[in-house]
Length: 397
Ligand SMILES: Cc1cc2nc3c(=O)[nH]c(=O)nc-3n(C[C@H](O)[C@H](O)[C@H](O)COP(=O)(O)OP(=O)(O)OC[C@H]3O[C@@H](n4cnc5c(N)ncnc54)[C@H](O)[C@@H]3O)c2cc1C
Image 1 (cartoon, rainbow, N blue to C red):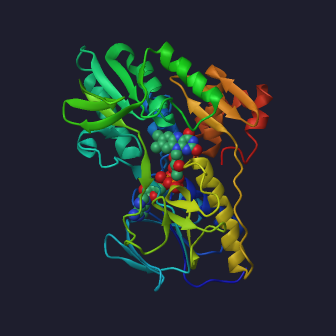
Image 2 (image 1 turned 180 degrees about the horizontal axis):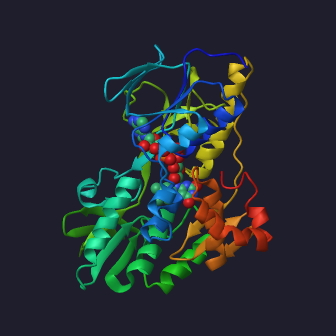
């Protein structure tokens, strides 16, 4: 490989950024790589439910970036990107630091989308990052101080809403009367039929109420207003958790600075931002021209990160980058304490066995996995041949 002068800067060290950085370093240990993130810890989002239920400890699901990257020989900087000049190849940060780059990878993930519905930002809890997790944990802990049953609404019948509802029910039992509000006519409408049916059984078993074809109109301090088939209802609430959708986190981009599609940065199949060959956008913030239907998941983000590392390697060697192809490795959903549902590689699994498989797959993906957790699960590796199929190195990434 040729030597490059200025660093490869990666902004956002979530699933996409972490994968591209570690893979690039593996490809060529002498490459100057700088990773920047506005927070100091990685959060393995699919395991946030297990942190809430204390099945996993917070430090296991949220290792410090400084440790991960110093172990890998990569420079890490905690700072928030505020501006990009694609013309000058420079970045500006919240503390007025200015940096030049040779190649730029942006992967700053998603933030909750309130769809500008009145009162959502002010009166709802969210479940998207470590900060949200801690806020929700405090509220739920505080609620335990009284024996009065509280009304808890979860808006959004996608994976986050369902997983959260089952987990909260299992942790707090009768402490909360739980309602899921979903605007379409079924829950998990983008997931496999198997996982949907398993989820429906889990919700029924836990007596979690599901309101379908229902749209939230407003959330106030004490009420949630819903419209369903032309009828408006206002219900008392103690807490509303908003999991109804996300939008790309792109506050550092100026209007019309680059081409977007559905609010996300449009990239070509080589993952380059349209017309800016040394800049790439991957993960939740981007959409690939010709592959617009890919889901917004960690699985996609990690595969893109893997591919982009190879493409940057090719560019540095003066070769042409290759088009990205997505390999669907299936989906896993946690359904309460010790239960899950999996549809992958033609195999379906539910219940406790699925929970263990899910835990092991994610454990193998954690960047700084705790040894005790690895060994606690290791007996399963030895005994169950089915895991070999699930645990092939490229599964779920
Ligand atoms: C509760 C929950 C459960 C999920 N479960 C699953 C699952 O089971 N399977 C699955 O495939 N997907 C799951 N997802 C989705 C998955 O987590 C995301 O698709 C994935 O995290 C996207 O990766 P990313 O790298 O694009 O963004 P993220 O992983 O969100 O990383 C973005 C990073 O950018 C940083 N950042 C943001 N703005 C700036 C800035 N201006 N300057 C510097 N740094 C910045 C953030 O601090 C963050 O570290 C889940 C999501 C949630 C919220």
